[in-house]
Each structure stands twice: as C-alpha cells, then as structure tokens.
Amino acid sequence: MNIPPYRVVTLCEICGNAYGGCSWSKWRVQEPVAGWDAVRREGDVGWTVLGCPQFELEERYRPYYERFLREREDIRQAKAEPRPAAYRLTEAEQEAVRQGYQAGHSDAKIAREAGLPAKVVRRWRERQCLPSNNDRQTIDKELMALYRQGLEDGEIALRAKLPVEAVVAWRSRHRLKCAASPTKRHLARLALYHQGHTDQEIAAVVGISAGGIRSWRDRWGLESHARRKKTAPGETTPEAAGRTSAHKQDSYSIDGPAAEVKPG
Figure 1 (cartoon, rainbow, N blue to C red):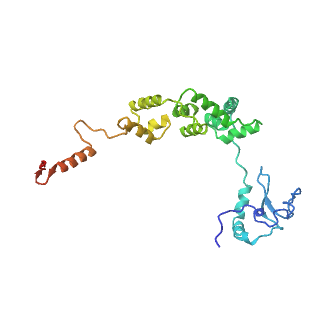
Figure 2 (cartoon, helix red, strand yellow):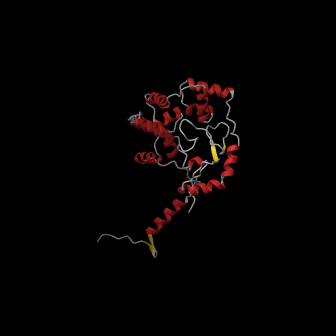
Figure 3 (cartoon, rainbow, N blue to C red):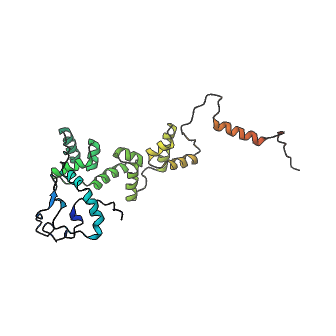
C-alpha cells in the first residue's frame, strides 16, 4: 500500500483515544498523560505527542503511523528549535504605521505605503488593541470620490494605487457605468495614440484590454504603433519584399507578361 501524502506530526491525530479516551483529550480535564513522550516549542499552546502509553492505533491509519515512526526524530528536532525572532518596527516605521492607521487606511494600504508586510502591520495593530479599519468602506469612499470627478478607470487606479482590474470590479459591483463620456474616452485614447504609445500601453492607462484598443484603432482607421525595425531610405523590409515578389508572380507568366484577356 502506498503511503498517503498527508504527514502526521502528532499521535493525537491518529489515536483512537483522542476524543475523550485519555486524560489529555477529556473535556474540562486536559491533564498530560503519565509517561508520554511529548515536546512543546516555546510559545505553542498544545503539545506534540511523539509517544504515549495510551495510544491505540486504528488499522486504517497504519500507513500514516509507519511514516510517522520514520520521521519522529525529525519532528522532535524541528519542534525543539526556537522560533525565529519577530520583526521589530523601528521608530520611523511605527510612526508611519500610526499615521496611516489614523488616516483610516487598511492594513494592506498601510503596508504598501510603509514598505512592510501586511502581517507586521496587523500584529502591530493587535498589540495596540486597535480595531481594524473597514477596508471595503475606506476603499469605497476613496473610489467613489474619484469616480464622481469623471475620471476613467485607469486614472482612478493610478490615484488610488490599485490595479485597474480592481477598479473595474468595484464599478461592476456597484453597477456604475464608466464615468467618462464616449467623447472624452475617445479623446483620451487619441491623445495617447498621438504620443506614440502602443496598444498595450494605452490599454494599461485607460483600463481596458489591448484588444479593445485595437478594435477602437481599426474603427477609426489608425495604424498600429507596434515597434518595428527601422529601415533606411529606399530600403525595403522583408515583408514588403515578399509582397512585391508575390505581386510580380501574379502579373507575369513563364513566357513573359501575361496576356490581357479582352471580353469577347
């Protein structure tokens, strides 16, 4: 029988007495079993049981138990190692986190602006016994204020420091149409086009896909600004040479120029 991929790290997971059958699992008792082999890392609440005189193995858990016996010493050593030291904020970082929290920002936004992991900000807030700012409510107020200014999704995303997809999803969730008028959207795209931006670059700013920009450009008869190999005056590109060669083959036969067929 193949050993399942699941890894057991304590005997309580596969013990038949784990649910009230021993003093450790009995409700309102939770006394360590006399003679058990258990380790606890500093800071952990429970124990990792590596051996117990009251352990009863169910036959269906035998593959897990055999693997546990082979890895028991590795588990013991891993549990005995001390936990890594927690990240400590400097005074400047604490001040930046405090200001962001007082401004009503979420943990994620405070972490982005301070250059810290979000879990570090969350732990700082929990140590200060501070409630979490309502992330959805704060973002909604900020995005709604930008939306009422008539800005496009791309501009809203740049000012709110969010992905364009998040702004589009927020607008769809509130059943809001794009704030900019069709004429304003067209002029904004046209201005970016005349600046020499590609379809991908324009799409990233206005908040739609590159295919949408390509369709808009084709509808208005605008050529693509995709980066091409520059050619010297009088020099032709391989694509142009291929088109010229194909045109010549269509116009000339083997014996000379194709005879013109006049209607009878």
